[in-house]
Length: 139
Ligand SMILES: [Zn+2]
Image 1 (cartoon, rainbow, N blue to C red):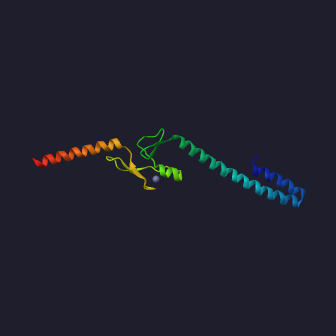
Image 2 (cartoon, protein in one colour):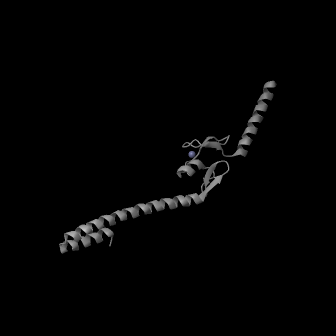
Image 3 (cartoon, helix red, strand yellow):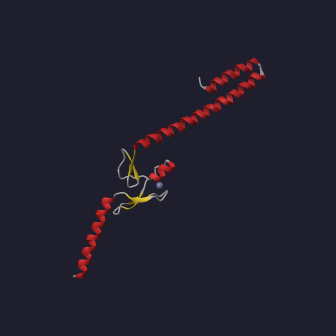
């Protein structure tokens, strides 16, 4: 029997006893019990959210380049450590220039380089291109 049905059963018995004080006290206690029931439901939901966050926290991988990835997800999906730290929100970082490995968070503007060695390769390639262009223009 649920709380609400139990209260209804007792209320009907108390009504038959024709005791108005007892009936008022029952109504009072019923209201408190229903409030507590609502509070329990709210706390269960909050607890489920916290557990979900804790589970996520245990799967977070922090990178020295100042971004996060999630264990079991693609390494190419990077998240903002600032937003996670401040708001417990996973905000996916926007890659603003894939060749130069630059990222930015659209929420807090945290930005950086996610892969220094790939960026160095791109810069070497650019220098090679410039050197070839300079050589071509001198011919
Ligand atoms: Zn952010």
